Length: 349
Figure 1 (cartoon, one colour):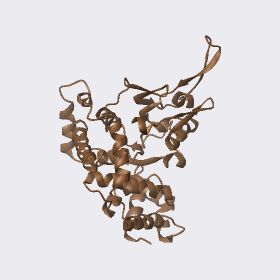
Figure 2 (cartoon, helix red, strand yellow):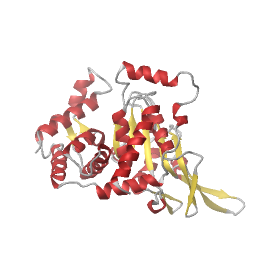
Figure 3 (spheres, one colour):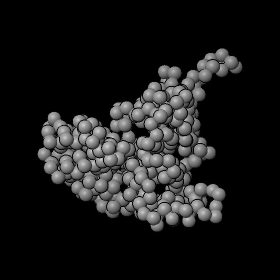
Figure 4 (spheres, helix red, strand yellow):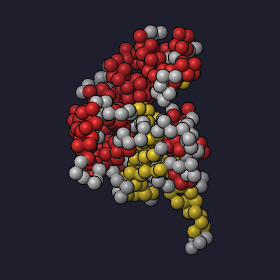
């Protein structure tokens, strides 16, 4: 696949998404860039701002639904799978388990909803930590072990990908369990969604839903086959050039987030970004460059994806967070991280 093909289809995808999700144009580009970079996404925001709708709409454009089932090597995979995370959810409810079959007098695997192309982990922070950890192997290695047998979740040669999209509400604290740092690091991006930016955007949301009882995304028709995404990912990673000066820029950015290397940044961060964050940043910048219409990554592409790629990988200075919580309780951590990244960009080591 050529980059021009990826670019034109990506543009059409964004156009169609814009018809069912009003506003959030930047967030839609981030979501598509993460998918082109073969990365999982955590979407954070208050209820009712179309986080789930955006993921479901993207699944429809790729021709994926809960009814679509593909069999590969004797294992059936759904097109789209939604898991509602609750405190009583067990790890086996996600991955599957061994079930005793009286007819054969033996145990056999019962595969869980994680066996899909796209998995939506809705309100992921409502599940207890041991249930959240059921996703760790799947997200990192794209495989899962049940009863001593390891099953692959991704078959790129067959056009089968595996992506996790998780949502969480940052406001509600009762009955929630914050994701551990190790799991947060598995997400390529954390996309933070707020309220509609303008009054006109909000009125357009109401106009879109007037006169109908079904969701607007129900009108979306598949744009491509699922295998398109695998081919597009290969094209992005192999054909988009990353100049040496951009690698140098990313390296200096990442090192400048670490207080042990750049002491002044300790005003904003207690813990900086790891090399894995740098890998994620470059891959996301490659995808963003294609969406922008270029076959070469520029510093501006890195800057565009800098916040969604790093905001969940940095530990903000707790004293500064407490200071900002007096003015804005829920956005204090995000504000500290934004200011810290801006400080880093202006004062590279």
